Image (cartoon, rainbow, N blue to C red; front, top):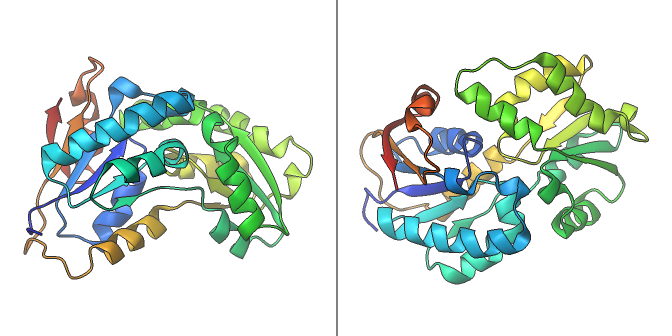
Length: 265
């Protein structure tokens, strides 16, 4: 292992920045490559067959291109659908991102937990299994939406968003039976922590939001323990799998996460 070999993170857009942030805090000198699969956006509206075919092939290509030491699938939908095929296809360690139901169950007092994700994620058997294993004494209320992904993307481009849009999304949870008892919400899409402040403001009542960023960072640190790193931080790289959009629209937002070098494939 060479010190300059990077950690690679892949998402369809800016959502994986909510994972990159905690990883940088945990491993400040680690070289980072963040890949945005804009040509595959949005993963949350892709079929299982599409993601199972696309994600392993793309991540393998990227890992070879940057000589990654480890890769993070920084997307809940891609992880719950394609994690095992990716691990079967690549020789490097792969870290997935799954809904943080276990920590939510550990802190919920009302025992009613909301799971807010994309439609593809919230309907997966993986969520059923996590609920049975870690939250069997809780009522789990799910709501799937792509609208919050779009709001997070707009925010990272510096575009204004409307508080009413966040209130409507939360109502997708609150309006269901026992929804008024929800005290903890799992943000089961990596885009969603990027608009956590907006969600909390729109809720108009106390809530705790939980997501997997810190846990993923700890896992990455564990898997790379004892490996060499550069002596100081270096500018991160953002690689765009382009759909023809102008990467410059995201330069400021990416720069705030230490991604100074933009590249298009």
